[in-house]
Length: 243
Length: 264
Image (tube, rainbow over all chains, first blue to last red):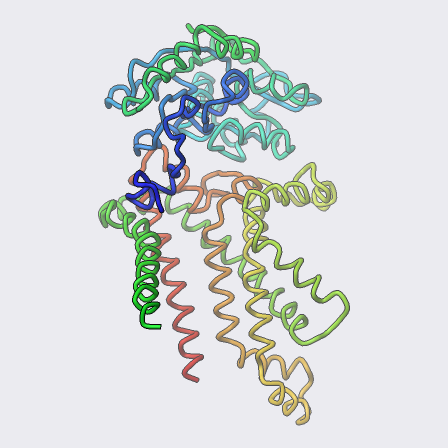
C-alpha cells in the first residue's frame, strides 16, 4: 500500500515525490544565478541545482519553494530576502565584470559603438541583475547616447543565458553580459571592455534559506563558495575573489 | 457483481473528485489571491496594455493565416486520397506534440539569422527573429495544427450527397465548397479556430526563444506575466486572471457552438 509518509496533500506528493531518499545528504537544493551554472555544476555535481534569473529565484524563495541555498548575481536580492527574514547572513562570494559581448568578427570596439543606428542589441530585463547593471552603466553615459543605445535594444531577456543565446544565434549584433559568459562561449564571442569609470560593482551574494531543513549542509555549501572547490571552480572560470 | 459495484462506484467518484480539485484549485487561487482593484491597477499600466494589445494583434494575424491557408488545405486532406496522405497528416500534426522549447529551437534553426533558410529570408529583406512578425510565425507554427486537425474532421463529416446535389445542379466545386461545405462544417471550423486561438494566446516558450521579449514589440501577455513574476507577483496574478477569463470565454464559446450543432 501507499507508505504513510506519502499520505497527505496530493500536490506535495507530486512536487516532492514519495521516495525514501528525501533527507539524504545529496539532496541539497541550490537556486543559483544563470551565470554561475558551469562553475556550480563542476564543483558540486551532487546538489540539486536550478539556474535562472536571480530575481525569479528570489521570487520562488518568497513563494516558499523548498530551496536550501540562494546564489544571486548581485548582493541586493539576498539582502532584501534577509531583511524579510527569509535568508540568513548573506555573504558576497565572487565578483564579475560587465562587458559588451559581440561575435568574434564584429566591428564593435567600444560601448559607445552600440549607439550607432542598426546595431541590434539584447540586454537583460529590468529587475534581472544583468539588466539592472546594464541600465546602471548606460545611465552614466550622456543622455543622448543612453537613449540611442536603448533604442537599439531588440530583446529584454529574463536571464543572462537568454542574452548569450540571442547573440550566438546571430539574432542580435551585441549584448551586455558578464565577462565569464564570454569566456564560457569558447571563442565564438569577443568581450569589449566597459570603461572603469562606468563599470558597476558586480558582486555575487549567497545565503542559507531560513526555512531550510538542511541548515548545516547548506552552511557548508555557502562556506565552500569562498574557500573550497567551488571557490576554485569560480576562479577558474574568470570570477574574481569576493570584494 | 454487487461486490464489484461496492468499490467501483466510489473509486470513480474519488478519481473524479481528485481530478476536479487538482485542476480547479490552481485556477481558483489566481482569483482568490488577487482583487478586482489589482486587476484594474495592472490594466492601467502601459506594459500590461502593450502586452494585451500585442497579443490581440499577433494572435489575430496568426488566426488569419491559419484559417486562410488551413481551410483549403484541410479540405484537400479531407476530400482527396493520394499517396503519402497519411504521412502529410502526421507531419502537419507534429507541432501539436512538440514541446514549445523545441518549437523555438526548430524555428531558430530554420528561419533564424544563422538558420537553414535564414540567409534567404534576410536576402528577401525580411527579418523575423526578434520582431513582431516573428511572434506571428511562432504562434502560427504552434497553433495551426489544432485548426487543421479539427477542420479536416469537420469537412470529412459533411454529407457527400448534398455536395453531389449542388454539383449536379451545375455548381462548380469552388461554389459548392463555399455554399454547401463551409456552412455545413462551420461549427467544427469554429471549434478548431477557438482551440488554435487559445493555444496561440498562451504561447510562451517558442515566442521567448525565437522572438525575444520587448515591450510593445514581442512581449505578449504570457511573456509579460513571466516578466512580472519576479518583480511584482500581484501584477502577474492580475494579468493571469485576465488570460484565464479570455480562455474560459473561448472554451465556453466552443461548447456553445458544439451544443447548437448537436441540437441541429
